[in-house]
Length: 285
Ligand SMILES: Nc1ncnc2c1ncn2[C@@H]1O[C@H](COP(=O)(O)OP(=O)(O)OP(=O)(O)O)[C@@H](O)[C@H]1O
Ligand SMILES: O=P(O)(O)OC[C@H]1O[C@H](OP(=O)(O)OP(=O)(O)O)[C@H](O)[C@@H]1O
Ligand SMILES: [Mg+2]
Image: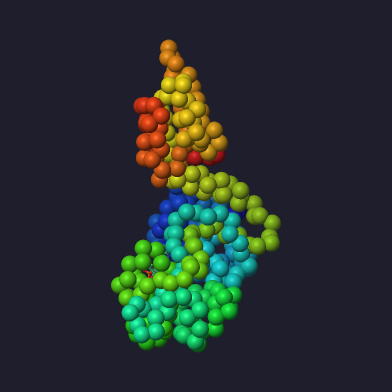
């Protein structure tokens, strides 16, 4: 039975369970449940703190887990990324107050200053690599953006998605992002892939594809078929069928969801008509 660690709290918890449910697995109904067996699918779920998931996976007490790339790297656990899951996307960045006398606007300025973060291992590694020696790295559990105003630190390193929290705290990002994060499925570094991981992976990839792609159908005159197909090459190749009593072709192809409108406009311009977009409910490629 494949043992899978799933975040029990925080911003990864809901989307992780939702993805597993879409992949056909049982998920808990009560947030106090700590373990959930799904014998039909030969898996068992352990609901753990997101920060601890990599630790359990690294020691081999569970086979795989869902966590954030940033959390996994910060944990230093003996785990590797197996599959990016495409949700909880964020950047991990330095930020400092704006409008101060000696503004911090580049990473070199961190030398001799105090940096607050919930990800102190990541920050220490990053600064060491850059050859920058801070005065201190202050570990905080959360609400890191408040630390500067409250006088505990001069600079922060934190998760940034929309930047709303930073702006509210009078902070501005500087330097290149330390890392781009998203939810990831992780497994132990050197261990043999556990039995059942292949099926889990295929199911999760199916959900990711269904989320990221749509099906597009259209009709195009024979003379413009090659132009249209060049716009919609598909994941592998489009399916082209002849139209009855006509010199036009019907095309069915997968396209990235977020490019749907741009692609429809381009197809229309080369003469495609009857362009119809359908959501994918589930997939196995
Ligand atoms: N606003 C956000 N947008 C996208 N991802 C986020 C956001 N905040 C946190 N994350 C991601 O969630 C993971 C952290 O989860 P964790 O549950 O520890 O913290 P949290 O979501 O801040 O929850 P809490 O602060 O309530 O404990 C990290 O991978 C981080 O990149
Ligand atoms: O760029 P934004 O869209 O504003 O999102 C980023 C914020 O979201 C998370 O905070 P959370 O609400 O989890 O609080 P925490 O700092 O206590 O963890 C993260 O730690 C940032 O503070
Ligand atoms: Mg948080």
